[in-house]
Length: 178
Image (cartoon, rainbow, N blue to C red):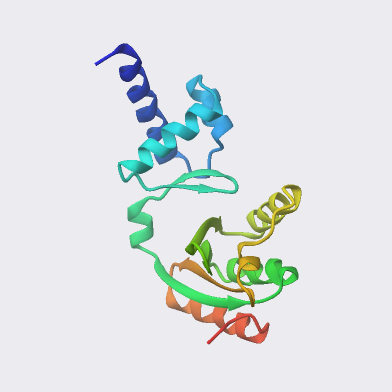
């Protein structure tokens, strides 16, 4: 084994430990600064870690290690929603105001099939940051790839009551598809 391989493996171990110990997403830039490499090297290392089934998720706020123990204590559901782009903030806020984490969004694309993107928002501040990044990048919401803006979210909560209350509020807002 060459010295470069040893250094690369040690760095990937360091990245993994940083992510496991973090209580928030960490940007590629920040990981690069902590490990002394470029963001591009970090992206490659993260991809290699994902390839060996490390549960790392790339979010709009940085990388997150999905702690299996925490996820095991939460209830996960898939919900179908439909709304215009200007209701995205309302939708996400309804979820987080009821203690529900929005893990991802998924749409069915006519060519690629299911497309999924990580969101990982848990509070209003994270919703605002997500929306701000979409606007700054002049990006479209994944739901825009669906003819009628129908999309799915994987959501998590500590209990069924939180999910039920969020679904009631989504129904009242005309966002929930049943």
